[in-house]
Image (tube, rainbow, N blue to C red; front, side):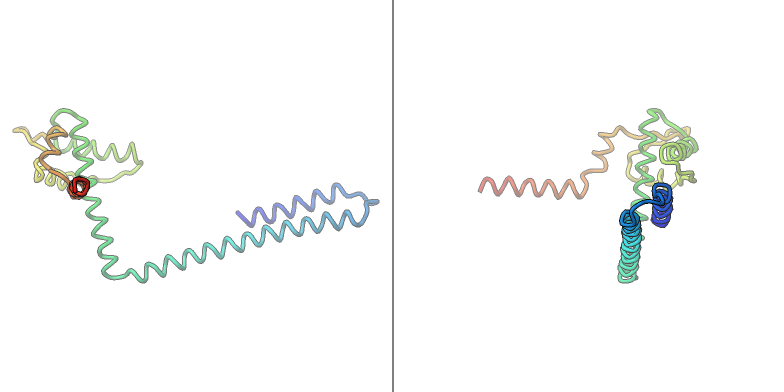
Length: 184
């Protein structure tokens, strides 16, 4: 893009100069116009070179950081990504069950999850519903009726079943420590 800007500026400047300069024009005017054009071209070229150097520095720094974080760091990052993906599957499945408001089959739940991902995020995928249902059942926030249809428990009840998160427990301890410090 910078090269297009550079070449375009030079061409437009030369064309403008040629069409506006008459044969009787003062030579100092011609020199001023040409020097302005050369100065602008030099500025554009140097800005391009600076952008290129900055980009190369960014790539080099990124590669260096990734090289330092090999082995254990890479494995931990991968594990974290897998855990996040598992949690997202469970949340999406529970959301669909809550949104339906009625028991639905495993196939319908799978289809609805895939539709949501396609319609809202533009991603076509084969949603692994069995794993998500298994986790929801293990948590106790989804039930299956005698005909094999699933429904989610009410949100407040699900929150009671799951219990407080680690973050909520930490905030509770901080709050109680603050209260204790104020009383003292």
